[in-house]
Image (cartoon, rainbow, N blue to C red; front, side, top):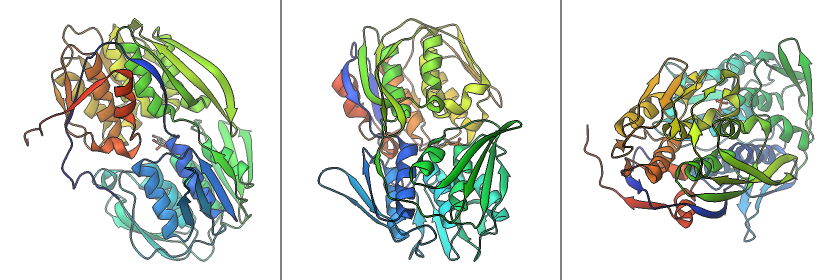
Length: 453
Ligand code: S3P
């Protein structure tokens, strides 16, 4: 996998170039793309996946599924075809599995590898090697998996499943769809019922897709949350999947259109799953002119076209309960907040600290470098809008695609250009970011490498 910590950085600058206008489709949803490849690799027969995100993170998952014995190809028609090995049928990988920057990829994949009695070794780039894996390893250990890892349960690490995995009941201690999914994926090959109890709802793509593939899954309201029960050792049936557009990528186009005066942009075919639209709800509360058109259903998920016009925004307090529905969108919300009247306070956002970078620290530093007042607490981030002169700074992106894209959006609306020290990680999730925004009228230019500090 490309390791952007090992290659030369690609500094990039964005600057104001007048209103943005046009229509575009964003690439497929990253969460759904990872899950589609993994479940297809465990199913019997050939699955078809249309609209798969072809960013580096998802391509790492495709490579991993091949390493486990599935056949994964892309046809001339653009459709990906995966021939699965059946539940419990993964082969021992011949080499270390390198997930690059992909946290979702590696954590979910640990779940599926866990139920096989061979050793798999996982690694990733400098960012991924610093991210906590214990949240997934803890329940897997309870299921009988042996783990050999660096101190603090960091990558690289090896895991080896027992001959027979123990089905467990697991109450997820952090609101994390990745942890929930890893346990359920492990449970696919455990005898009996694996139960995950979620006290705070998170994105439900795994549950929906497991049902679609014919897994024995039941969801029941229980005291204080929801119990997701999965009957293990059932065959999965191959599927035809259409991946809707990624709302976490659309977010950058939406915020750009809101803050660049005179803009009018439509983003087509965006996933509108209720657990993914927290940013849109928040931007509407801030006074954003956002309309959802052509609502439809694609493969069991709500989808629509989102039309956004430049708007006067006002600061709001975003409730902590909304965090799981917009966890990846706070960086770009902070950019919108810089153009709002008053302060925007984001509550309950502590999980931002363990994403591709410590996103609270990275955002605060980047905002201040560009003349914007921002403050943080352990679980909060707050941004004051209306600075007289925005821009002019160089931002450290810490191998984090969303930090890079957020600040490039800032430069489109600031008084002065904004430079990011490395735009290369954008390829992990949204390779079309620059070309789509350029087609709307945005201006990007290569910048000089930052001086080493
Ligand atoms: C994801 C879940 C979220 C999110 C990540 C994708 C998923 O992480 O931040 O980008 O696809 O399950 P957590 O589950 O750790 O909150």
